[in-house]
Image (cartoon, rainbow, N blue to C red):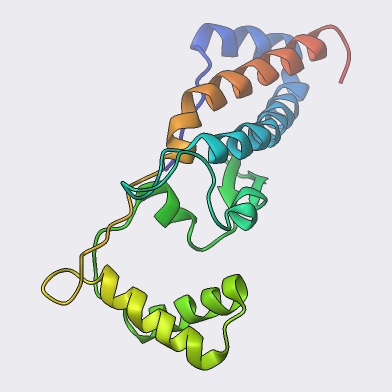
Length: 179
């Protein structure tokens, strides 16, 4: 999922003509700084996210601390990207439909149960089996789905405005002779 911050051709030409060699480095520095400043916004949005299940509460529940603290920003060729390091961040963002859980999935659930509840290995395998059955679609399980929480998707308009503002400040400062 990519969001693009746009600068009009007139603005681009004005800044480029006045800054010349310093335009692209200033622009890239502004983009990266803006992306880094989006991280606190995303951390706040984790706590405001709607529940993943119909019975859930609004906000961060359970062990979202790892997810919350794993937001990063990095420079790429086209600008910068903001992403989450956790492998399950896509499931939190986009949800999950009811599906059968394979052996690798049960192993991950067992590891979570041991970490979360301090279960023994045997107890964790029993928890994983029960949860995998609950996630399976009928007739074997209840078909438990996880609704999308849209942490990043909901923040994209705010992120775009924030990045545009930072780029504008950087370019204005560069026009005055600062860095």
